[in-house]
Length: 499
Image (cartoon, rainbow, N blue to C red; front, side, top):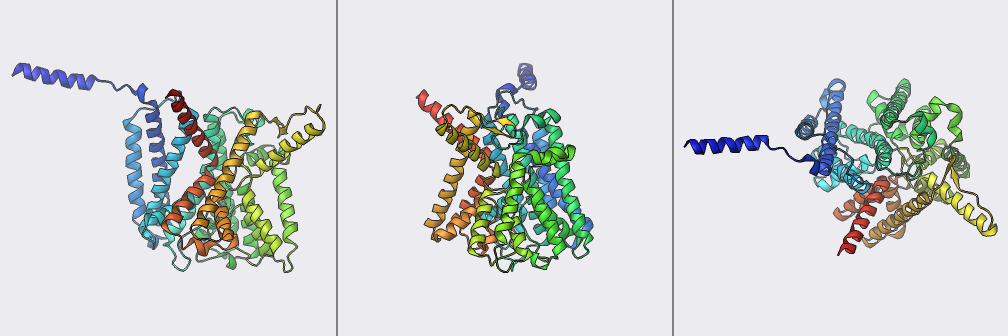
């Protein structure tokens, strides 16, 4: 009996003395740690919305928010406390990109739970569609305006959109340097040596971006509130929708009821949301350098050309100008519907182009067009002048071969995605025109409300909903998807060579 008791004690001592070799599980620890902290952040968002409505409008409080917040806090805290902090030394770029895609999928599912509980459509795919539409700042909805959601859910959709607008900027800003990619022009042209010298730490710049984003939101809210025509919640609703370039209207106060002053404030918010946040930060600290940025200058020139094109309309009103700014910032606010053929085609071009890189706007991004122009110009000059050895520069930085390769890759994937989504909708029975407009609104994350396709979106089937979800994520997480796809391709090639 004593021997048996001693053997049990020795076994227990060995179990207690056993140390898990965490060094062998660094990649798993990094994934768990990332998911855990993301769950803690989501719990803070749930409790923030609950607290806001508790003090502002107690009649509209929904129990699902504290329940989701408590669940996210428990799981996130358990993951942080139960596992040690990981080291990022053994994680490659492709694995970080794939993990980012996985985390965005988890976030989309969690934020869709309150919508699923209180949505008139009881399919979870419809709720996931709504969540992804908000998270990617697309702003389209399957729910008809005739069947409004509860006020807390409506505000939650706008808040998720607002978080998605700043989230994609911070994700790209922190992910690109973390991937140890030497190119300055992979996704955001704002990663210049000037900014790296003035703000060398990524965390410091991220805090500046968050402060700027929050400050602009509050200023827009106060400017709208000072007009005295809208309640504070609606002012906050529109300010978050503008700075995130999401384009979700308020059900009780649509755009048609807003005054000229309020629409001017919304235009200012949309333009600020479509400008590069790092460029805005640099302009605050050094205003003289703001218009020296090639992309910012090109964007304001494009705005001027757009105003000139829209002025060709016979019955020009301010709503048409509002509609152009909504298109060029990929916000998607529907304001003017009766556009002539030239204006309609130009607005479609603006939606495809989108805003600046490093902003909350979607679309193909202006800096890619500028880079293609400079590279093509240089190649043409070399053709007619063989001794022409001038290098291509963008924002004072030389364009490397790696930049050109990644630019062409992004152009190919963007075009292939657009053609693929258009073909898929055509197969499902839509006319070529409607299929092109649907794919344009989804991939550019503009929503397509400017071209009145919301009636088609409200009747989406299960398959069309999943095609739209993948399209919106492809348009928003283009850089991360490119890196993830390339990493998968390289892994398959290595496996085939090994075989």
